[in-house]
Amino acid sequence: MFKKEVYISRRARLVDDLLQYCAITESMRPGPGIFSKPGNVILLLANNEAPRNYAGNTYDFRQDSTFLYFCGLNDEAAGFALVIDCDSNKTILFGNDIDMDDVIWMGPQPSVAERASSVGIEESRAFGELSQYIKSKVRGGARVHYIPPYRADNMILLNSLLDIPVEQLKEKASVELIRAVVAQRVLKDENEIAEMDHACNIGYDMHYTVMSSARLGMVEQELAGMAVGVAHKYGAGESFPTILSQNGETMHNHRHNQILTDGRLVVMDAGAEAMSNYCSDFTRTFPSSGKFNQRQSEIYNIVLDANNLAQALAKPGIMYKEVHLAVARLITVGLKDLGLMKGDVDEAVAAGAHALFFPHGLGHNIGLDVHDMEDLGEKYVGYNKYIERSTQFGLSALRMARTLGPGMVVSDEPGIYFIPALIDQWKAAGTNAQFINFDKVETYKDFGGIRLEDDILITYEGCRLLGDRRLPITISEVEEAMRK
Image 1 (cartoon, rainbow, N blue to C red):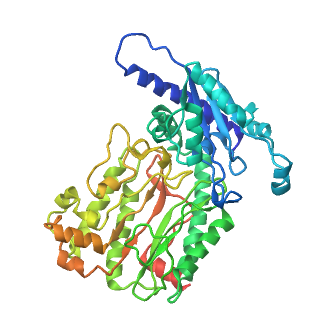
Image 2: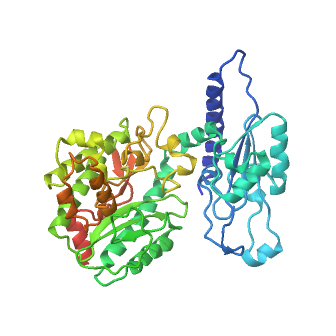
Image 3: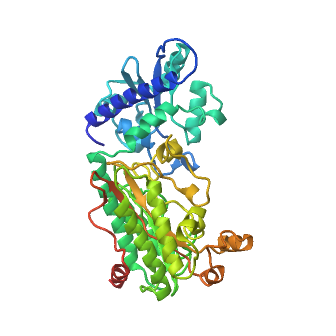
């Protein structure tokens, strides 16, 4: 938790931005008359405890990131709500104080009033008063702004408070509030950057521990367990379930039951959360045997060059979609040099032929979420009114396309994959046959995949890697780490 002044300032800006977006929305509506600002109330819900298999046995608690960003209350604040009356400039924290039974099992806890005061909120009320408060505002003509819910219990609560059918809650979420939240959270301040540097240092230790411990004959689970252990030793745990597999052609694989076998590649995509819940997200690919063979080295160096190119291009004023396409072009050139692709490079990229090998986007935003603010909708986070999502296979998977600015943190994660089912599908249909040498591609069906991911902060000059140092990434660095 940062100083309470940070949260006071964030909430004040949230109100200002929301009212501006509301005024813009109102000005675009047809019809005569002078805009008379209605009442506006912001409602942000904390998360609740989530049962694993019965009520008393819960998953590790993870606070809602938007509530955390504006309220600062983390693991001790399950079942709370933050209400901001934009017109009276009143902020209220709703929650319940614990009873003696809670004290016996959990120990003494701060009161709701104490928690509120610690983040600059002067008024607190029992959670049971939330319904009456919100419904009275609605009856008075106020508009209650909420963000899209993603947990069933909060959907049920919003349904009760606002009388909106559960199936309509997401579509009726406040676009103005979403835009106001994104405008703040997408740009990280010095406090946040420091936390993300720390999260990246933990992520470094996760990956280096695994890379330097891997040996033929080990089970993937042993390595995945090491990564999880480091994440919990130094922070709040993983930022997402660790992906570690010799089937690197599969984008997200959470089964860790294979034995490390000579000639295969291990893709590890994993990150950590600092105690503040700011995230990191790295991917490295290493040979099970500790040494790359020639074919692996050739593909690996294309991906490495693509990763470095993205960092060379990423700077304020450039659209990340442009960086993605430049990376796609480099990958196409590299695969053409190996005889896997053919024809005009620019035409191949325009047709999306490279997506047979690179079927995902270059990166995504990172912050309090590993895919930052994805719950608010990618069209508001990675896109905006100036750029719409493509429908082309591969490019449509790009999560972050908008113009970069100082303070943004994005992942840089190009990859090359040989996915047998996708190869078979394209070959049978003749998809992009003028750009792909399917006979040569057939010989790579047992290859797997390679992905290399770093987290980069956009600065005024360009960008920099987050964390104190870069994970081993060149072939010689990876092999040296594995020798140790």
